[in-house]
Amino acid sequence: MKKGEYTAMKKLTFKRHLAESLKSLKRNGWMSVAAISAVTVTLLLVGVLLSILLNVNKIAHDVENDVQVRVIIDRGTNEKQIKQIKQKLTKIDGVKKIEFSSRSEELKNIIGVYGNDFRLFRGDSNPLYDVYVVDTKSPSQTITVANKAKKIKNVYDARYGGIAAKKLFKVVGTVQRWGAIISILLLFVAVFLISNTIRITILSRKDEIGIMRLVGATNNYIRWPFVLEGAWTGLFGAIIPIVLVDVGYNWAYAVLSKSLESTSYRLLVPGQFLWQIDLLLAVIGIVIGALGAGVSMSKFLKI
Amino acid sequence: MIEFKNVTKKYANDITATDNISVKIKTGEFVYVVGPSGAGKSTFIKMMYREEVPTSGEIKVNKYELENIKSREVPYLRRELGIVFQDFKLLPRLTIFENIAYALQVIEKTPEEVTERVNRVLELVNLVDKKNNFPTELSGGEQQRIAIARAIANQPSILIADEPTGNLDPETAEEIMDILERINQGGTTVVMATHNSYIVNEYKHRVIEINSGRIIRDEEGGVYSNEKANV
Image 1 (cartoon, each protein chain N blue to C red):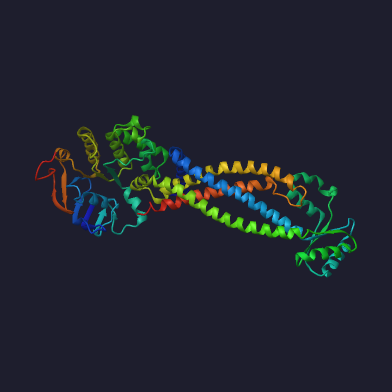
Image 2 (image 1 turned 135 degrees about the vertical axis):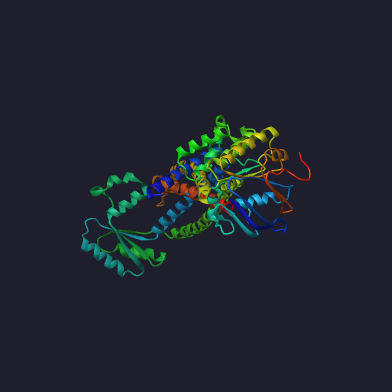
């Protein structure tokens, strides 16, 4: 067979598999509904937990930012003077790291956190200041470092998060750790639940697989439609969780953002983070569905 | 061509299903395999399409030496065989057309070839008008005719039928036999395990009788049983 013909044949076979997998999903009726529902429930849990966890992470990061000293540089300070400020900061006891963040970088950060409305302030209308972000060796040194920094020439102000932040950071750290453990456990549960449900649908079709083998179908030829069907099950099962997580998060964001207004902590902006969660849920569904089907198949394909 | 040389099959529980069987079936022959239940007929038949593997001995089916065949070659062996079962073994989720088409799609025939061949075999078994039905919507006889149509769709050189008339009434069984006869006249080797004495005595062909795992009779144009005429 020529190479071109071979490729055309493989394309035809793949099209057959694709059509076959969708047809089979439809003809399996309630079995498919059961499998898709299992995926839906599991992915909904994963989606909700992941949204919470990523926000905890975000707040943890905000808290971490809070214990830094932000040395705000007067406007109109020239480059040479800015460098001099850095030299003076370096000499302060307890300073670990100094990072310069220009006013345009500051604005970029704000757009990242608060959304695109702040793009209006780009360019000359940017109301922000150039900043030195100073990490101290220990949180307790933030106050002295900030006080000393304030006295440096051309420094407009030096701000730091309170000690309360330290306590909060501890709590957030614990939540993060436990969240990660629960996420991993839940992912295992997802793998187990989804692949098991798909295994049951495949078990019920054991005879069918036997017949396919008897008419001379190769293992790969038998496996592909099942794997694709598993992937469809995962994808369709991800639809409801994606919709619910999107709607739910937008609602939660609107409610919680109001209560967080007075603090320096912010939740992740839905527009920037939800599509990642959506994509992740779809990918988890597809991958676990396809893998679950593939693995469950293999024991019926031994000759 | 099918050739068994000193083939023994023992199961794990030490039951001997076939005991040192040697037999040769030439291309184009029609052979009945008869014997009581549990005699080893099914194992004998299953070893031909490598559903069972012999404990010792050699089996040759066309160009394949089954004692040396690799797992990945088994599908290709089966594509040279058509297999028909007592319980039809149709895919319940597929229509009649799709059931037959499946056997052709696995050997990567183009859609045009598939349609053309499916229609041809459906004409042969006289069931063109049922092609969009599902197997459960058909009678036993009709299902068996579809199973035969599927078995011959890719023009196998050997048709293996394990009790093809076992679930059918005498009239329908005769219809099935007429189809198998026609297929055999087209040059296809037919190996048929059966309990149906009427068929064996009516449609005379070579009879291989198996009992307790051994061939006790191999007779051209033989009857079902030399001892008594079973009904």
